[in-house]
Every structure is written in C-alpha cells, then in structure tokens.
Length: 459
Image (tube, rainbow, N blue to C red; front, side, top):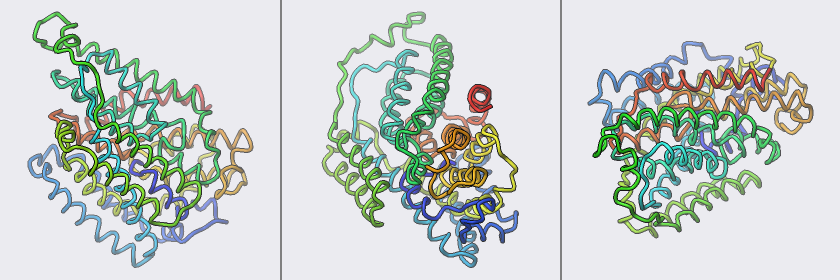
C-alpha cells in the first residue's frame, strides 16, 4: 500500500512474510497467516470504512485528531494484543515499522517546512504543469515523500487566489506523490526494498518508458483539465487570463536553502543504511539529527511564512497507527496464502500487486509477489538478482514494481505522502474530495491509463 516509507522497508526486508508458494523460505509470519481466520481482517475493513465515511456523516467529530486517535486505538490495540498471543515478534516488528514510517515522514515534514519559495508563482495551467513535471523528476531523486513536502506548499500558494484547486492537489498526488518515484530505489519503498534484496541500483531505469508514458499522459490530462477550469475562474478582470500571471510581480527566491543539505542528509542516511546494513538506531538517529538541525537552525519566521503547524503530521500519525495495527492479519493472510492466487503472467502480477498496494502496505506486498515470482522461476526470493537474470523473471519483477508504485495513487492511503498532502491542502483551505470522491478521480483518470500500460508493456 501505501503506507510505507523507505526506513520501514529496511526492517521489512529481513522479516517480510513469504507466500506459501515459497515454502522453502517459510517464516513464522507465513505460519501466522495460515492460522488466522478470514474474519480477522474485519477491523482493518472498519478502519478503511471510517476513513471514507466519517468525514461525510460526522464531519465535526472527525475533524479533531483526538477522535481519530481514539478510533485508531479502539480498533488497533485489541488486534495487536490478540496477534501477540500468536506471534509477538510480528507485532513488535510492525510497531517498529510504524515508528520508522513516522520518523521518515516527520523528518521530511520538518525539513521541507523550512524551505520558502518567494516571488510570483501564479497558478496558471502552464506553471502548475511545470511544477508537477519538476516533482515527477525530483520524486525519483529524493523520494515521493521528499518531493511532495518540498513542492506542495509553493503549489498551494501559487493557486491561493483560485476558487477551484482540489483537482490540482489530486493530480499532484498522482504524479509527485506516486508515479514520479518509479526510476530509482530512492523513489518509493518497494523499489528500495528490492535494492536491499540485490536488485542493481540502476535496474529500475528499465521502467523509463512506463514512467514517461504514465507521467506524460497525466501531465497532458492535467493541463487540459486545469486550462478548462482556469477559464471559468472569476478573476479580478473577467476575460483577462494574463492578469493572474503579471499582477504583483516579485522576483523568485528561495529562503531556508540550508534545509536542502538536511534533505540530502536524510537521503544519504537511508542509502548508506540500506547498502551497509547499519545497526538499529543509526539510521533513526541520523534522521532525527537532520530534523533537529533543521528545526533549530531555520528562522521561525520562515516556518510562519509557510504556515507550518504540526496538525498534518499528527493526523497522519494517529490515522496510520490504526492502519498499521489492523493491517497485520490482512498482510499475514496475504503472505501465507498468496501462492494460491493462481497468477503467473506479468499483467496479472501488475494488477494483483497494484490493487493490493492501493489498500495494504506496498513494501510487504511487493515482497510477497516477488517471492511468488521467484517460486515460479525457481530462484532465490532472498536474492532478487537471481530472478532478473532471465528476461521472463525480469518482466515479472518489472510488473510487480509498476503495480506497487503506480497504484499507490488509487486511494488516499495508498502511499504515505498521499494523506499528508491532503492534510496540508485542507489546512490551507482547499476543500479536498472525500475518500470515495478521490477514488472517483483515480478511477476515471488512472485506471484507464493502467489498462494502456497493460496492453503496451505487460502482454
């Protein structure tokens, strides 16, 4: 799914559960999935339903993070306690993953909150499309979370005088928070996880044609949609579409530039930790150090200029603690019984991994299907370099990578930055679509595009 972040992938790499098809590498988590009843996924379904429905039926109740936290704990704690009676290691591992997840998102949130882009950034269709294109490139260099946190506030400020902005944020999630991170292991957690399992760092560049197609098509569709809505805006001088771009001209500048060093520090810590397997605590300490340096060396007025508050990161923290806890049975069952899905073709792996990654943690989902592909090819699931030796194996792993990364955009919870971008936009006064409203956008825009990807690349 979504949920993951690069650091959580580091831990998941050592303890992720493998499907029954890879019985030679059976681990305790797989046995756990065999023992759990199907109804044990019920709390997870209720958690997803609450995220989707509560803003519609109890908006005033749901707007308070305290109430979200209560619901998460009421659903999550009993599930975690019950699973601990079967396999305490899995519960402990999941909680550590959650802490790693929040450390990454939190550190990037703090660092990016100290970068202020000043000057005239008028929210015209051309500029908006350019910012999204820039984010698509940055996402593969600094990760989807890093790129999202750097660009979402400048984008919101550029469009602050427009009445219709929600679609801009939706496409930002499609491109910057998901599709852009397809080219390197730094881009998205599943790819980094593959790197930890011996996939060469540059191997994912073979996905460049898919990256160009998906992101290029999304940018083109966005430009058409944004241009249409832009022409309907009630500007100060009706009919003069250039006024927004020329009024109150201020030279562009960036304040808080030292935060780019801290951002590079976070990326470097992740890369070094993943490459050399540093002891637990070193990576975590490195991220905290970068966030602390950013907090204490960035002038407070810069964060004020960014309208920085802790609300969005707190909302992510309280919602995802419930998701992580209630998700344990669903992932365990998937990993234990994944081999029974009866899939064998690249397009089947693409859709299976993608649809599950829309709602479940995309890192263990990636590992589950990578293990199933390794079983089909008779290779070592712990060393995915053996899988990609043959073109058949490489095509299966490419399909899994595409599904895990691209379909994280299908829902708000499909990838970590999705929910945070939504929270920041709402904090800035943007009325974002609800859970099902967002899925209407993804269903109309993304799913047909994924069908095209299937026919062009995965048959």
